[in-house]
Length: 386
Ligand SMILES: *Cc1c(COP(=O)(O)O)cnc(C)c1O
Image (tube, rainbow, N blue to C red; front, side):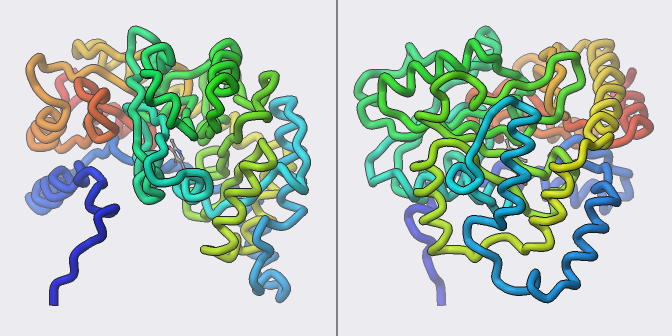
């Protein structure tokens, strides 16, 4: 018996990395020691203190039951306290904070709460693929906003046609940005608030890399500018901050109605986050941790090693101190990012992510992830001829 996938599933773009995955298996089978810059998952461990809280709390029977839908009040209070301390943003833990099974879950579900068939969602290109998938699953129409290097990878709202704006209901943004590593400041976020208010658009800012920066300047929260809470929410996550990608815990904060809508979708689909995980996450947020600083100083060394080496090899690299990604131009003229990634893998056993995997405007670039050790970065640079 053969079953056809739904139209909505078939509408998603083909999985670009399938070919590279296949090639990787072949190269590996040939005995090559693969060095992967492809992984957006921290190699550094979850802090022991957090793991210990998880161990202890998982033994307590009340934590073994169904959790509450909106998350433990204790966790939401920790989020609210952390947002106040870290970004100067005050949030009501009762109505303006929602726990998520990783921020990916919330991002994917948000359009189900606000999009009717035919409504438009504004999505950055290049960008995290979930914005588009969530939009298509809800019957919405993705409108891609080009992120161009000439504009420091910020969207230019004046280029969006009026007939699109009329139908636009949600706009996704993501700074510090995956894959480009670009950042946004309060000046830009003020423009976003003005634009969204004028056009009646919900802003959903993905702030997954809020704590990953290696320069002097800390990353700005979208919610820290005036009026942001009137029109939007911010997604954040413990995944990158505390190296907790496997725990699956994140949260949405901001506008009460938007949080309510997202929460209503979730009530119908999932049953919340394991309480022991919520309590371990709360511990992480409550305690001023050396770990964020320590991780950032590791990323800083890795970044300067890789960027220095790539530049010596003739790569043109986009300069940023945020995220754990390096976004570089494909060094070979007239080669697509995918062909370049495949030839690099075949010739050196090194994996990079082709920019076109994040959208058409990612073409011409490749992404290196700084989630491997300095030794491996050095080895990679040597193989590439540095
Ligand atoms: C890693 C990542 C996320 C989501 O991480 P979760 O583990 O689901 O919290 C969201 N957005 C971007 C851009 C990411 O890179």
